[in-house]
Amino acid sequence: GDSVVQTEGQVLPSEGDSLIVNCSYETTQYPSLFWYVQYPGEGPQLHLKAMKANDKGRNKGFEAMYRKETTSFHLEKDSVQESDSAVYFCALSEGSSASKIIFGSGTRLSIRP
Amino acid sequence: DTAVSQTPKYLVTQMGNDKSIKCEQNLGHDTMYWYKQDSKKFLKIMFSYNNKELIINETVPNRFSPKSPDKAHLNLHINSLELGDSAVYFCASSLPGQSYGYTFGSGTRLTVV
Image (cartoon, rainbow over all chains, first blue to last red; front, side, top):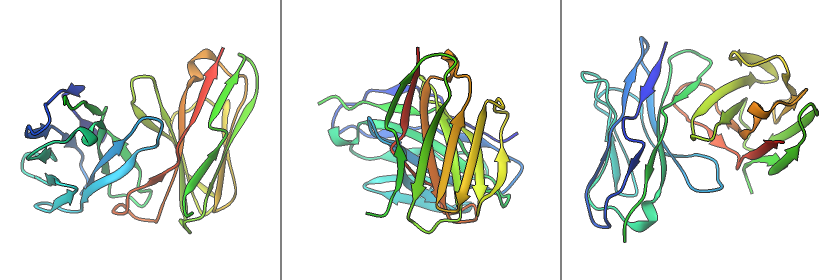
């Protein structure tokens, strides 16, 4: 079945560091890809998305490129800020009409001041 | 405010009890969902309704029964609560199709003692 893999459970960069959070996916369909962000005590919020291969999602200095050849959607930022601290989920929406979203296990981003 | 709202925010109850969680959205979305987030932050879909019709029912124990009286409401009733049901339950809604992503509520933290 469809799946999303995030290899890092937690990353601990310092403020101003660059960031890459890895995400790979597996599906037989043509998915849309998402990054959601979750702050403490809140529900996940849509952070950025990409609908097809070679699309790039962007939001608040974060970027992710939909790479079909490597089935990846890594989240990147040039310079992280303390306010970026949160849990980030990579996700895919399969191509069926049910539009079910499958989430990765999440990566906790904790920025050191 | 346009939103997905869930009640209650916190629910503490004894094993064996029956409880309900309510969800309402005023975004005009046709599709609503229930997700369960465990203590390790993993998000798993439970149910999805499209315009009051059940379209996704993942392998959830039949102690869990969703009900959608209209397309703006999706409630979750849980019978004979067990310790393993302790989790955060999120309601979400979306437009039809794979590309829109979800809007989540702020969650209901259920603790079974």
